[in-house]
Length: 311
Image 1 (cartoon, rainbow, N blue to C red):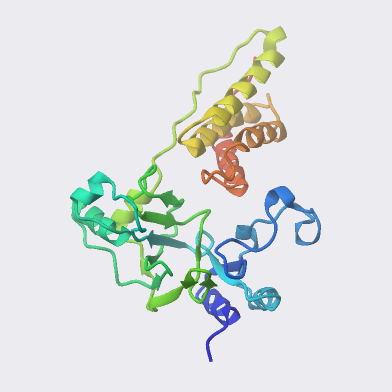
Image 2 (image 1 turned 30 degrees about the vertical axis):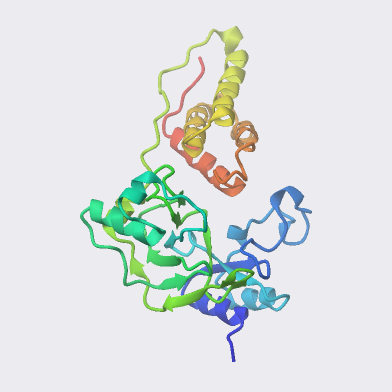
């Protein structure tokens, strides 16, 4: 008998992977989007994202998958995974000149080129899933002291054309899932290897820029206007950012976090201003609301180490 998606979800959870339901026949998370959250039931305390709902609890998995033949989403961050998503060439698609010159026609070829240029062996010998398009998902374990984020193609510190990575804040479609395009299935159901050190280094985000730490000494009667202008300026940078948006959000939270630590602003007003500014980028594949909140928290925490008081 063909294993059910419930069986596949339980098997994934048994490996320590945090799973959540995908809409039947789709790659999209089941449930409602944040902008249509009813604020009731499981969301009574606030909208619960797919990453927050991801679990390894067999009882919760059985309860969810008995409602419908859901697909399986694997939340890579909580699962301690980095998955290399190697895509294939689509009909009529043009190969970028850099990769055409290297003879690459797929994500698998690009990864081989990147490894060769780095003087490293081609990553392999790890659990591998074949996607319906003929691409590959290579599963790797992330070192416990490393935090990786998603990358896309050649953007930022991405590996290259047709190569995406899924780590913190991301998910992959798990083996056993059937979509309109076909089924995700194991190509090699072996151990998950550690992410090679050179890829850990390559995929680790560059250090974020430090915020200025000069003391602030506005005249007493201008204090309130200064603080209002500071919040507007940092929020404006976030709202207007056209690239490195997550780094911009972090730097803004760090700068304002210094003022929070100096008791010049409250954390609540800073969070509200920055989340409003980040809102225009949420849903554009830059980051999710959850990721924005996490970035703001990190920036505020870093800013707290260098309080700035308004004289």
